[in-house]
Length: 317
Image (cartoon, rainbow, N blue to C red):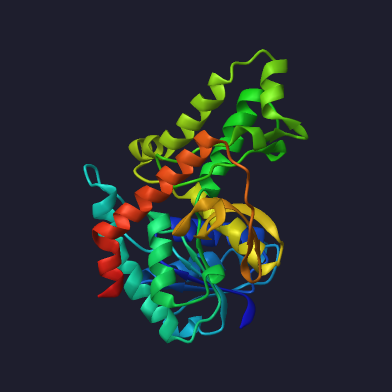
């Protein structure tokens, strides 16, 4: 396994936003671009490489194929179709499950044994597909989960309170979607609880719930205005990959496998976890209120029900 080598499978807007973020961030020794459109990845290789003179560190960029994944430390999967107007999440999941299944089969045939990061939507379900098809240990397969949702929340709280985003520590848990929730008592502004900050500044707690609703609706609004979202998730992916390559032991709200944690089993869902070069080192288990636990259970049940309807069948075919 070559440290710092990343295979990017899917050279669409999300994948290339991640690649551009990595070029600017540095820390990746080699980036292999893989896509069914060979001309596109050759063009992307050229375009990115022309910026290497201004990059913070040396980086090899190449248009490749699955054979190049054998010694990769990380494989990031962004391939799949976007949700169309009027299309249900289940319909999207069925289409992308077949795509992800074939990708993972090809990935594993190369001899790959690194960390797999899933970004294709619905990400919690697609992470399940990748884990089942790959047969890799569960700690080596996880999805972007609510990393972007959490980043959006931190930004919105920071804007509302006029505090730097980096000093906002709040986490969104559950599905990357409508059933997510925020355990507000674990949210901090610097070193002070956000509940106290809101009271001290005579702000209504109702505003925090409104900010969470804005997060949930953010993707819909962006898609309505510019057809797709990709910069935010691209930077989020770059951040996750950095945590793996640099063996950071950073806490991120990725979509990971629960095996009894949070009273849930056999499901991938967004929760805080410690990420390092081995993937998921440990799940950070918060003590949830009864209401919060119900919300997490609801998220998990949505995933399990969607799996039963068709995803399990696709995986086993």
